Amino acid sequence: MLDCLIPGEAPALPLHLVTRGGLEPLLNRLPPGQAAFLRASGFTAKAQEWRLLPGGSGIEGAVAGLGDDAASPWAYGGLPMALPEGTDWRLEGEAQPEAAVLGWCLGAYRYTRFKAPARQPARLATPPGAGTALAEARAICRGRDLINTPAGHLGPEELAAAVGDLAAAHGAAFEVIAGAALEAGFPALAAVGQGSPRAPRVAVLRWQGPGAGADAPLVALCGKGVCFDTGGLDVKPAAAMLRMKKDMGGAATMIALAEMLMAAGTPIRLLLLVGAVENAVSGTAFRPMDVIATRKGLTVEIGNTDAEGRLVLADLLAFAAEQAPALVLDAATLTGAARVALGPDLPALFSDNAEVAKTILRFGLDVQDPLWQLPLHRSYVSWLDSTIADLNNVATKPMAGAVIAALFLRRFVPDDLPWAHLDLYAWNDQARPGRPEGGEIQAARALSRAVAALLLRRDNP
Image 1 (cartoon, rainbow, N blue to C red):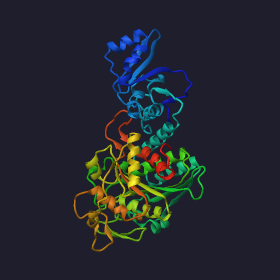
Image 2: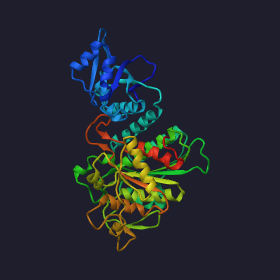
Image 3: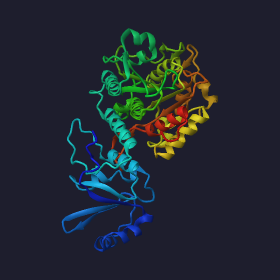
Image 4: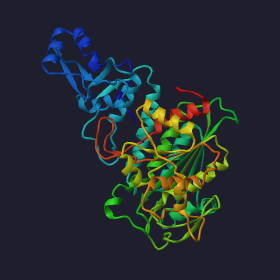
């Protein structure tokens, strides 16, 4: 998958990475002709700035700027598509191997299932000490592939199969719940999917890390896997449907996170739940003002069929809570309100456990995979009241949509269970270094470190 890398010992040209503060020392070390060329060309070592170094044999190397932050993977993200195609490079200078490898791999990513790429990336000789970055890059690229795959090729069956492939790769147990068992055990999820000819299912992965005994802490990951969302009978306008193949971005994020935790050999017990479903328009689709059951036993009046993701997660969260986990995390492309508040790059984090929230936010900043916490404001709980059911799936007021969705989910998690909910975008609207346009895995790198810190008291898993 990572065809942008070559073995560390392979022949390669030197790629001098330099911060603005390190530029003058670098110029003093380079051959005089190359230093003079860089000065004459106006090179300042800002991020994404680069120059090829000429020599008697043609290209003898390159210099690339890191700006003021050598630890940012995005400082390296533009290089594989900027440096000449077919060239191989080795890191020199101020490069930080983990950040460089991660940024290089994420910048080289292209979705190629239906169209060959316009060019191949320049390749990087893999430096020592980059194992975590390699594992994270693989997980993120696989997750991006899932989000980028058109819904006609990735329905509930195919999404569940992706979880099965991950389980097989890591020796995990795997099962799919479908049919009558799903209708009985996950009735809200089944209601969301009843309008589609592609039957819903729940993919379940269970894994026990090396050295983890039966009493090792259990972390439960729940992902909204709505493979396409028409809005149901409360149908979306056409423009709002254009990116709805990404409505399984929460599931892709949890799949990527599970892969990172397993690849790291984290000594925990892991439960991954993916609710794979399609919210379609048909004569069998669930209707506005229907009342549906949930796994927890609460009844829900359907105020809007386009608020289906919280129904999927409600059953998953109830199932997860029954397993007595030490920590529950869920992720979903849940509300447009979160994007209005925070934009596309900042997933909204909800948790009423101060330690959980603080830890996730800290690692998000540390690894440049940031989140922003929004409040679970309990005064708004009454907005979900229903006269004929235990609660409605939408609020009576057109405000605080992301908060309301999180408060809905909170009803399905025991009060004493550490839990965090992520409302994310899972998409890059435009290409940037390391972040090509299309599907994106957000917050998984932050969460992988937070899990180890919270459950194993590790600050650097």
